[in-house]
Image (tube, rainbow, N blue to C red; front, top):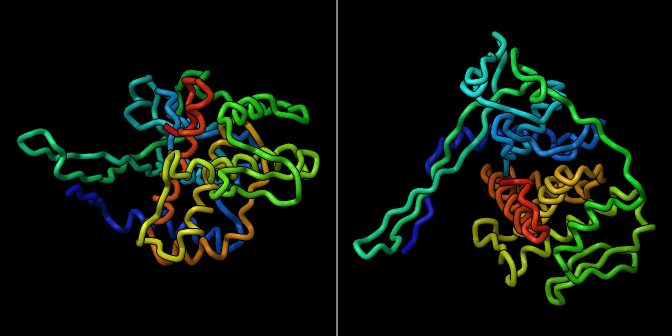
Length: 295
């Protein structure tokens, strides 16, 4: 029988959850902040490896960058800065990010008998906190103007080949019919709003038993609906950032439910962010691109 166990300090979960709850209780979803700041939108990446951060790390690094005014979404460890003959400025405070390491045990025949997931933490610094780094690591992207239709987003959505039907005045995914329904493009207040909404519904689409078969089990009970909406919201935010879309996310109607969910379970945001990253990865796999949003 397989066992999933998480070895970690509960305070790590609580610290992140309390920070997000503080924003939600002010009526603001933290993952919407990058779109409200006026800065270019992108997924945080490691400055050295260019590997995107994923899951709850995206939310944490977005929040810290916004609060401290860091213009570039690139981060690195103290050692990585040293290896590039640079240094972190004295007095700068790092940001904790999380890494899950999976450990398996096998029997004599090679069958997996036990699986554990251990949460590790390490500290990263934004490139703005460093001195002596190469200039290209500190460059800040300038957002470009998009036409009414966003070519990259249209191509991305078309590649998934979901059954999308336009018409009416509601946006939703119907699991029984496996259909995404959206109002016409012109009915949205902006192109970005259309794409953010479509991506939100496409994340719901990935949860079908035909695809990722996303379930929340007894742990969330009657809060499963709120958890699924949180996954869809985060997944849309991650994909908007990767595609460079400044879209209006649909968070306001769910904030009350999310506050209850996170108060009940300090690990819920970690689970939702992880499943959102999985959904974004799944959708990105259809595009054939080697550049993934949330590895």
